[in-house]
Amino acid sequence: MAVNVFTYTSGLVLLALLVVSVTCRPTLEDTHQGVGISSPEKANVAQARSDSVQPKVPDRPVFILGDVEIPLHRNAIRNKSMHWKDGIVPFVVDNDYPDTARATILAGLHEIEADVESQGTKCIQFIPRTTEQNYLRIKRGTGCHSPIGFDPGEDGAVVSTLGPGCEIKGIVMHEILHVLGFYHEQNRPDRDLYVDINETNVAVIRDFYIRNETIIDTMGIPYDFLSIMHYGAYNSAQVKRYAVITPKPKYGRTLRLGQRVGLSPTDVIKVQTLYNCPLDTSHIHSDMDERVIERCDFALGMCNFTTDNTAANYAAKWVVQTEPTSDGPVAGYTNGLDAFLFASLKDEEAFSSIASKEVSSQATVLSTENLTTLKNEINLKQATTTRTPQTTTVYSPLLTSGEDGMVCVQYVIYQKGPSSFLQLFLSGPLLQRQELRNYKPLSHDYWARDEVRIDLGRQAEFRLEFVANLQEGSVAIDDYYVVKGECIYSS
Ligand SMILES: [Zn+2]
Image (cartoon, rainbow, N blue to C red; front, top):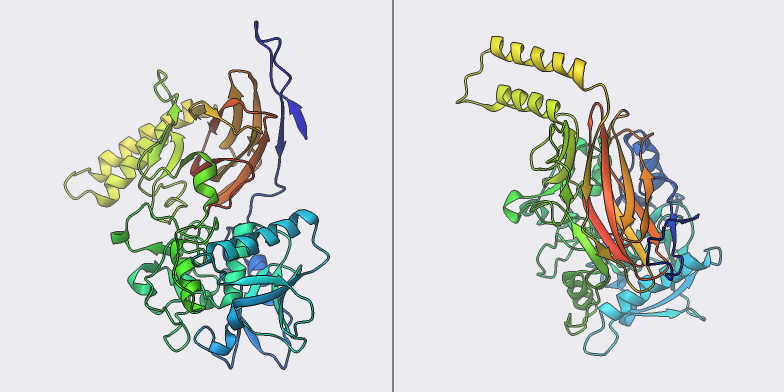
């Protein structure tokens, strides 16, 4: 859809009409099992999609490790026969992909090739297949899954499945690294030194099996939280409200897990080491660095956002929340431990502060009787004063698009409703304020990703406003990015 949103102000009549178009993704939930997030009620569906869509070929037994297929009677990465000879990968991409998806897949292959190049010499080469007996076939099936390493079927093809929703460059690169011989980072033998796994909340326990040294060769390369092969905190969670994989606290609360932007320097070193290429990370290309207009993961505060919290007698406000909430997120999305931007009603905050005193305070003596009285007071106040929705807004600073005016806004939201909801507005000096998103019908007790593509038509200044409408419950935001051009799959 394309909507005119600019108004003219006096003195600006000579400005060309600028057109903003916004492209909506049909749904909020992610499409890559093992990378993204999906709703709890769909967890079983997602699991089935990832675990059972691969046809079970009787003479070629496989079981699925998340998006990975592992032959039962072979080793993987340590087994040299499962590396691609001389790093040469003949490939075909099936004909039934739309042109844009094909272009994304080719871009993913090209980026891996460019990133792992050593001193001007190719380390991995993807070449269009001509007559080669063995080759990589990229197939448009269902879900995203790949074998580990060079593992051809009877027809000579190593099949990597990239179904609808998997044609995102970072996901393509993740899958192709499986094909080159790499497991998920959290399957390394030493992973328990670096991350905690909440096993009781794991939907597919096999995703978190540690692979011992006879299978995984870590090549002496340190554990890499930033690897494109690392899961995000909430991947494979049975109850999506709670994280499954979190960094040991000593590694800090600002780590990002599960990025799908591009290869990390360590990913590059791993490929170069496995394929006996000289190590060279001097030329790694990062889309993120070049294209980010603004980002905030709220680990260290509100970044450049401002709020209307200072309005007199406000009943609702946005805060950077570092502790679990009683009626909203338990932790941020970035790594399952971190802070996030949280909007709640003042009364509820007062209530939860009493509740937390009740649970945790050793020093403050708050008798049961006093507590009950306080709770009753608050309940009474809530009953009489908070039935009308309260709104509170958080504003980005004035931002400037790239020359072509293409912008992507992406973030994860958490919405405990249904009577609390979130809106996103676009505004600016020459823009008529326009609603980009209204999450009113949604109520979900977990983080969900969304992205909004904006076409300003040409370089322009703009501002984003997140408006929380609160009646009961809360809303929250985390991992906010504004990038030039197309969306980047950040985590
Ligand atoms: Zn994977």
